[in-house]
Length: 375
Image (cartoon, rainbow, N blue to C red; front, side, top):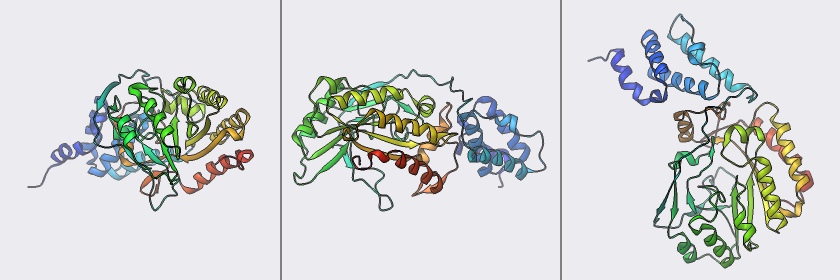
């Protein structure tokens, strides 16, 4: 028996982000769906467009949708054209209103017993990528910061942070080839420093570094929580790196993290203690006048640090896997991070090659004074 449209709507709507819409938008969509008999794919995309308009702080779908269209295709194409136009033009945060974002999170901590030590290759390593051979060590699962673009939100429960009760013992039992040099980073599944020495994780990692001088152990952070490093002798094979961005992106997209001057100030204090520091510009984000804003950050670093104090500077940009995009659309918050034209980049969504060349060339050229000394 052939389904009527109402039955199809009820069946298909469960496979969209309809549940993430407000009650008012749900009523609106039901009305226009029955009026124009949108296909499942059209309805699915229109719902995503609606969520994006709200997330980007743009006009509401109800304002954009005309009172009448000649047919279904014209209605769908009009909304899609508006969506594409917003994605294709440079973002601006000048009038961006993120006042609805709550800076209070209820985080619960739990102790877990993992079967094995979470040590492995960098998750982006593949035959199609240039890899720096970084290995990642998960000392904590989930992060207390709330960066809109972060992939961690699609892997873990954001409000629950887990510590492996046997982490220290597993590190002691780890056998590495003494003739090999390893670069191991701890900032993949959580921020490396924001939790301090909770559950003894920094004690365990410092002991591991002392016992394995052939390991370069990297702590990557967006925090300024360096008290443990200031109060203790830091093994010479430990490096501390900061993920940096412009004040515009930190303010609007890197929620709950330390301000730019706080991160740079923390790095300066550790450099004064003799700890090698580094900086990651990942992601570099396009928006109006973004190149000038990033250049100011680059110049600040060059004026604040001697190149001999800096071990590395890395660059990267936005790349999204589908679960992260889906997670972003399921949240009720403001962000312009998805307001960009996507192209496929090794199975992920990212900027096109022209945009990447522009941002990376600007960054590389800006650090010309450090080219001889910094990796």
